Length: 166
Image (cartoon, rainbow, N blue to C red; front, side):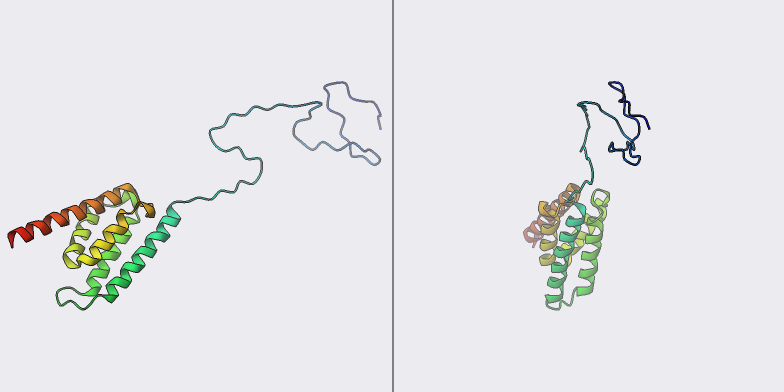
């Protein structure tokens, strides 16, 4: 085995043979001195494991489900109404929830129609549903929030017209 030292700037010969204290070079750069690396990146630079916590769709979906579970309890607690069954109200609320969960892809026509139908069937459930959909805390798509607000305004307008015409 050779005991000659490498020339300056040259990597040492592979080590690791019996009795050789030099480490074996497996891969990567061999640097005989200091090495400065300048890196420009548009995101995170990670040297090893990157652990992230994402707040958004999953948590918003969970919060939305919790709100709608409470709305379902309110429907169950409503007194019997000969003009509208609880099943009809519950089905309409489930449609609204399913569409709202689509976010930006939600059909504004369907949401608005179902909300208006809900308002005609059960104003108390309508108010709670619109409040849930309008809440920025739920993290729903802005379009869903605006549709809920528009439906509420339209219902108030219709209610005012009915009171004025009665």
